[in-house]
Image 1 (cartoon, rainbow, N blue to C red):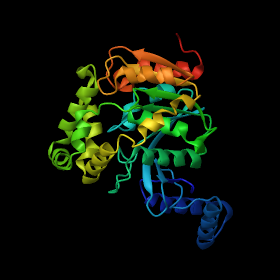
Image 2 (cartoon, rainbow, N blue to C red):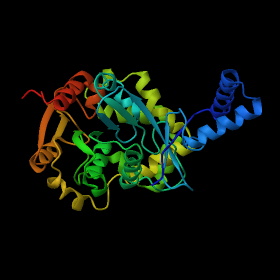
Image 3 (tube, one colour):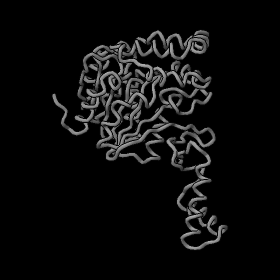
Image 4 (cartoon, rainbow, N blue to C red):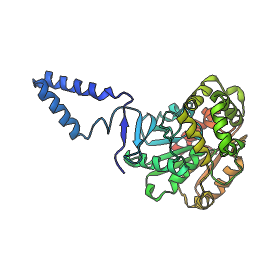
Length: 335
C-alpha cells in the first residue's frame, strides 16, 4: 500500500508555500529568484513532499491510486493514539462531546468513513463494512499507528471488530472500546429494510427532506429527545443534500450486514485485547442482549451500562462515556 496523502482543501496552498520558501532562500543566502525556486523544489522532493502526496489539509487519500478516496480526519492531543470510528449516518461530529476530554492525554484521531460527513462519496458500490475496514487498515499502516486503541460506535464498532480480527493488524492494537456495537445477526430496523427496496430507497431518500430523515433517526436513537437540537440535525442532514450523499447512504444501508457475519462473530472469542464494552440501558437499535453476549464471548472484556441513554452514549451521555473510556485507558476503571 502506498503512502497516505494528506490533502489541503485549497490547491493554492502549495503554490504559496513554494513562493514563501523561495523568498526565504533569496533573503537568507542571496540566491537569485530562479535558483531559489529550483532549490525549493529539490528540497521538497527530497523530503518526499509534493502537491499530490502530502499537505497540511485534514484529509487522507486512501484506496487504489487510480480510484483514491479522501477520508476527512480530525486530530488533536498528544500521547498514545485513539482512532474514533463513528456509526451509520454519523460523522466526526458525534465525538464532539468526548474527544476534547480524551485528547487531554491521548492523540485522538476521528475519521469520517467513506460516504459520510466530509469524506468523499464516490458513485460506486464499495460501501460494505469490509470496504470501510480496508480503508482504515490502510490509514493505520501508512500512519504507522501502534499501541492504538480502537473506539467504535454501532456500525463503527463492527468495523473495529473486523480490524481486531485482521491478521495484517496484528501487534498494532493495545485496547478496544465498543459502544452499542453491531456484532451479531439481529432484526434489522425498518429504516434499513426500506433502503434495501430500490423504489422506496430512491423515492424516499430523494424526496423526504434530509432534516426530516435525520430528526426521525435521532428520535429513534435517543432516549431523551430534548437533547436533540438544531446543530445535530444540521450536522447530519447536510451530507444528505447532495446526490452523492444520497447514493452513499443507500448503498451503505444495503450492505450494513456483512454476508459472513455469523462466521465472523464466531471468531470474537479469539480477540484477547483488553476490551471495554459500553451500552445504553434503553437502546432500541442494538439491544443490550448484544452487549451481554459480547461480554460472555470476549475473554478479556468488561461491560458497563449507562443509564437514561438510547443508542448514542457519546452524544446523549458524553461525560459518563468519556469517564468510562478514560478510566479504562488508565487502568483505573471503577467496578
